[in-house]
Length: 371
Image (cartoon, rainbow, N blue to C red):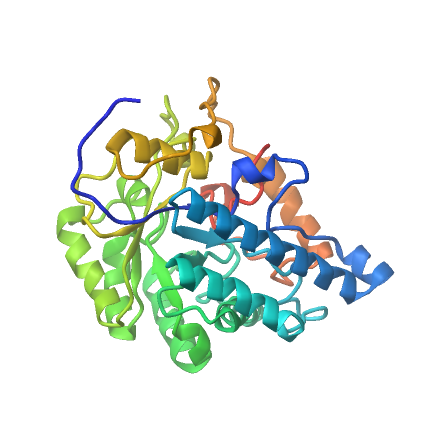
C-alpha cells in the first residue's frame, strides 16, 4: 500500500459482516433469518433459536475484533428476526443473560457497538401505519441495546427519509411524531444521518439541535448532496449536537467506485477507502462503509500506520470492481424484495417507497454482501 501520514488516532469500524469469519467453515455471522412460513410450520421458538445463534456469533465477532485491533462495529439489524413484527413480534427476555454477556464483553474491551435500522424506518412518513411500525422497529433495537447494558454511545442511526412533495411539512411532521409518539428509550439512542438525496447536513441542522438529536456526518453523502457550508464549517456545529447529549460523535466514510460517473454509480460504495477525510477530527469514531468490511479497515490501518494487523487475516482486494450494485441494491431486486417482504413480514406492513431503494445509501446493514 501507499503510505500516508495523519494525526488521526480515533477508532475505525465496519458494518455488520466480517468477511473472514463469514467465509470460514462453519460461517460466523449474525444475520440469520427466515420466512414467515418457517414460523407457521415450526413456531416462533425456531426464530428465537436463530436469534440465539446470531448472538453467539456476535460474541465471536467481538472477540475477533479485539484480537485484530478493531473496537468499533455496527451490529446487524437482523439479529432477532421478526422481533418487531406486528403479528409475530416478541421481546428479548428469553435471551436476557446472553445479551448481557455480550454487552459486558464489549464494555470490558472498550468496544463501541451501534446499529442502523433499515431504510423503511420512516418516522416522518405521512402514513400512520409506517410510523407505527417504524417505532416498533426502533423499540426492538433499543431493547436489544438496553439489555446488553450498552451506554449512550451505542446509538441507532436512521435517515429522515423522503420529502413527500413537501420538505418543510415533512420536517414538521417528524417533529410532531418525535415529541408525541417516540418513546424515551428510543429518543435516548436515536440519531439522524445526512443522506445523498433529500436531506443534507444543513437541512438536519434546522431541526436536530432543537430536538436534541445528534447528527451523523457522512462525507460521501455530503459530496453528492452538499450543504452550502464546507465540512470544516459543518463539523463543529454537528459535533455540538453530540456534546450537548454527552455522546461521543461518530462519522461515516465511503468512496464511490472507481470510474463512477452517473448519479447512480456515484452513490454505490467502493470496496475500500484509500484516504481519510481532510477535515476528520483526530479523535473521531469513523465507520467505514465499504464492501470489504474489516478488510477496508485494515487497508487504512496499513496506509496510515494506525494499528498493527495480523497478516494471516488480510485478503487481497478484488481486481474487478464493477458498477453493479450488490444484493437488494439493484432496481429489479429491490422491487421484487419489497413485494416479497410484504408477504414475508418485513418491518413494514405497507412498504414505504418515498425514495427508490437503490438511491438510499447502500444502506443500513449491508447484510446481503455477495460472498
